Amino acid sequence: MPFISAEVVTAERFYQVNEVTVIESDSGYMYSYRDDSGHLIVRDIPPPGYIESLTAERAKQRAVVIEPEAVSPVLVTPVKVDATNWSYPLLVVLSSLMALAALLYYFAPHYRRWRSESPLERVLRRASIPVFRDVALSAKGFPSTVIDCLAKTPAGILVISNPHLAGEIVGQPQQDFWMQNNRGDNQQIDNPIRKNNRDTRIVKLLLGDAVPIHGCIVYTGRAELSPVLQTMTERLSIFSTTLDSHMTAFPDQRSLDGKWRTLMRYPRANSCRVRARGAAWKRALCEHQRKVVSGSLLLMSMLVAIWGLRV
Image (cartoon, rainbow, N blue to C red):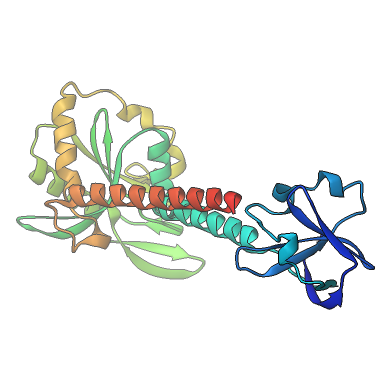
């Protein structure tokens, strides 16, 4: 039933029914009260059968009742206007947006990490193997390098080079460059075997000989390698089926875990400004901050929704 504004006319009579002022005029029956802002509100009501059951609570919560002696003989006649109450829908939309913002704020880093994962990383994570990728390392006597992927398997630490190769690849393991023929386009590419050997030596210099450290080349793409290169590299689809060979447990798992924590202190290549010392502490702090902010937004959205129900 729409709210009604008013213009001045003369009413035939008015009386009280259950503490609500009822007005009877040539336009029919109405009841009136003042809202929280003090405005006079007049609403149409059906004839007598409904009047007797009318209460102040059904008219409006916390309504200010107009007493008969306070009503002038000059009353109001209904003129319908659009007075839809938008407060509750707006509060519902606001609480929904806050809840959505909380979820996006919390899950955005996880989504970005999932989108940026390489196929190799997904294969290792599905096998429950911890992964640390794009690691910037340096050691005395070696130039700085970025290792594509480090993985902690029960058998030791894997130093993995993960190139994307296409076309026909020919070359020798000891050469600096290989030749790639991709649809008639011949070009030189870096030898990933030499790079992986250098990366493996750097890791061994940093960690020592306490735990096994192995290097391997796992490539993606539809490359056709020469027979001699096929024996020293693995296609990703084959590597995913040969992970069992790296699952034989190394006896001293405590030393293996300690060496892995040492590697985790080194910065990633895309965040090399972060110092190695304290990097893990900063990651934990960011995770805790994200949980606090997301939880606060969710709590505020629930409070707004509850408040909207009470309005």
